[in-house]
Image (cartoon, rainbow, N blue to C red; front, side, top):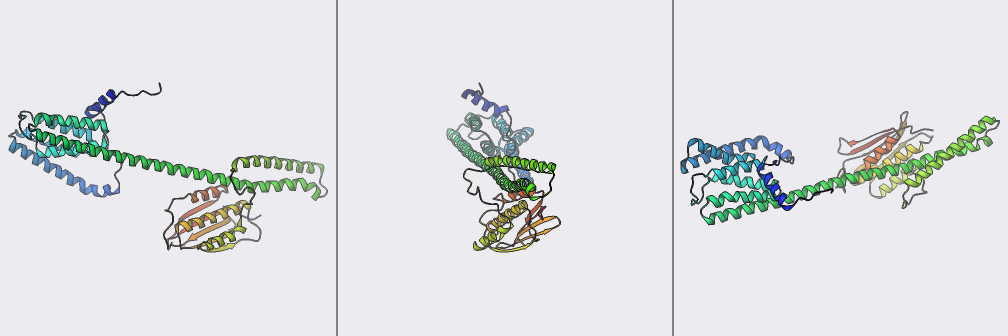
Amino acid sequence: MDSVTRRPGGQVLGDLRRLLIGADYPPTSSAGPRWARVRPVLVPVLLLALVGLTSAAFEYLSDNRNLAYGWSIALATAGTAPAALMAYRPLLAWRIGYAALLFGTTGYAPTESWPWNPVQILALLAVLWFVALRADAGISAWCWLLSLLPVWVYVGNPGNAWGVTVLLAAIMLVGDQVRRRRRSQRALAEQAERSELEQARRAVLQERTRIAREMHDVVAHSMSMIAVRAETAPYRVAELTGAAKDEFTEIAASARTALDDMRRLLSVLRQADDPALTAPQPGLAELGPLVDDARAAGVDVHLAMELPLRPVGEAAALTAYRIVQEALANATRYAPGARVDVSLATDEQGLRVTVRNGRPTGRPTRPPGAGHGLVGMRERVAILDGGLTAAPTGDGGFAVAALLPDGGVH
């Protein structure tokens, strides 16, 4: 059998064993920066409060129970020690408090209405609350039942005993509901985090697939031109030797084979509902219409292009277009009302693309970091072995700058 189902009786006994001698519940790691700020002050205050409670319990025992000095100190400490442990080791705190509750009344007649000191009772109630918050329902039920045992043994007044029973039941039930709600909230938060990570991974894969399709179109165009030029070379170039003609024929055949392989790859990368199967990939010439569309949408865009007369490479032009496209979309979402400056220029290192927006004047339509546009930008730039930086500016805006090597210049 792949799994063994525990019988209910085994589960019940397992919960009792965990409560009495089993592993405790360690502190959770949910303490945030607020706790870090108040801890240096709160911890000493709590320690002083515990010392005060222990002193109060000692005086109560000495004055009302006529106990020996050592026995009063031991019983008072055992009664207040759980308060110091309940947030860190709730089961251990309950064991200590329960032992004091059970054995600290030796010699008292059951007819007494209330054989314990108030500090001890308050500490144990707080411990039961922490047990209900941290322990499973079965362990909490055993904790409630066992805590009632000394009450019904030593408290002679049935009304008081029933009152304690109802109070303990309320504490355990409310604590269990709070525990269930917290556990549900943590599960929902973990599920939301996993969903966000999965969406991020899916977005990266989709963007990589899109990049691969677009780069395929660019490279396929170049490969087809190589094949055409190699096939027509014997007719365009005079006085070619036989060996040169054979070399051009082999080049053309290799180019056609590579082109066929890339087309088969394209059939895998293309999606059935892709509406742009035959549309040419955009380049620098399409930046003007892109900026015009942004202006029509109400974005204050300024475009500056300082390019040589010779054309920029197709791969770099496509990457530059996609960077500007995504940066304008991000500026629209995250910096509404801000001026956006787009500049493109070439130098000896390649094509440089910069998109900078100023401080937004409106409310962002999406929270910062909600999208994956920068991931796609970095993927595209990495294909060309380029570099990309994206960071806030000193004036409250944001800037994206990319360097695309070999941008240029054919």
